[in-house]
Length: 168
Length: 168
Length: 168
Figure 1: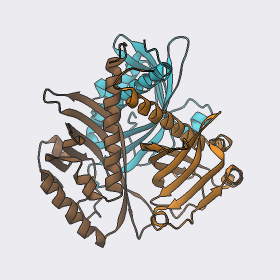
Figure 2: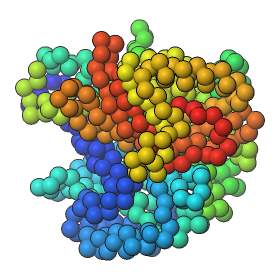
Figure 3: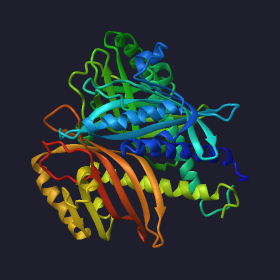
């Protein structure tokens, strides 16, 4: 252990960095469309939902995507893998403003982060803002490292021309 | 104290993290429109200004927003609270590229960071770039933690359809 | 040395921070158009290329910009300095999702980061997404600090109205 006045802060820094690293890997998996890697970042009982800020603020659970458990998350990823052939696109996640808000009695770590996802359709030259929002997260430590027990992606907007419900 | 070659760097890291955390809270207050929290992030004598990069580079002090002291900042926030009813919107701040540039003899910490603010008007489905720029900051330590003694928000652009002078 | 279970992680943190700081300085040089500073961030034998994600994924080396060695990078910067007069613009880099992926036997540090560059043309009021992509980097330690031995800027998109090949 560190016998310094900064010990507590160092712990905080290391945890912050660990979650930042997780989010970077998460974004890379989605940007590279290696969705089987993406699925493995959730716990078996994970909750994954993508819903509008409007619904989130009114406590309406209805979302674009609603998955209870990794099996549903996997189904969603594979469905995308098939249909994505029809509309190839490039995505790019920028994740910022990470806040690790606390760890509860069960060891679950709570955090939030802002995200911005750009999209390029392969027949158009410009990037557009696909989705902007906030991740509301719960992480759990497992034998394989940190995993998401819950991620709620609450988006401010959604482009109308986006037919697919792409994970973010 | 840490007896290691990294002590100095660790101090640097901790300060960097502290300011990053401040900026994340700052952004969250504006994004959630909890403007009374936002006001409290400034010192009593704080300087807060939002001005164009063009004017900043020419040393013209004229800005969209110009506040000397927290009382003026509070007035601005309350004015917004009232008028915002007429044009509801969602904002989202992404703050990146933090640079802590130094601490002067009076203990004032100097830093900069880039920001990008997206805006969603509630009658339109897409997010647009509301403002992109740089924060030029001075922080002071107080009994209540870090506060902004000065924040100059220097924006590259401003959307013309933006009637309100929203704090960023 | 730190005799703590966190030593390894602290090393990781410090290296992460060092590269993040480098990227922040890099972005600041381009945003302020102090291109002579930008040039000095590369090693003498540096490789600098800007190419499309499409070409990168197919292993086509063809890019918008292709420089072998700092002399070519300097030529590119000076060419820009002259032609930029005809189309003044503001750029702003947001660099996120830094991942330090490893250090090889020669001490070369490998890293990636996502970038988003906004552009404001001075006769138009709005900011647009100029370029979104990923930096694939190799850093080398020199007597003057970290330098880029190789930076591949792989962009998802490019606005068609962009006549100049601006470094990113």
